[in-house]
Amino acid sequence: MAGLKDKRGFIDKDRIDLSERQSVEYFMKRWGVTKDQITAAHRKVGRMTKDIAAELGKKR
Image (cartoon, rainbow, N blue to C red; front, side, top):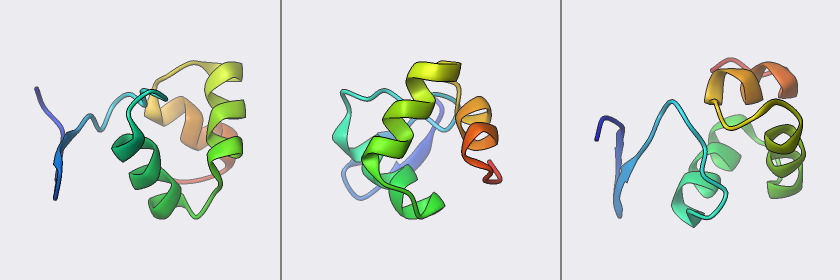
């Protein structure tokens, strides 16, 4: 699986899975947003990182 290596394992850089705490925490820190903001964007545009980043006004 291609992804970013984290202390706990790999994080998929192309998709955000809300059930994977490490993935959500990584993108919360990277983009400086809350879990609720990521969740709302995820529900609105889907699970692709580029789409969520665009919805949040962040660079992928």
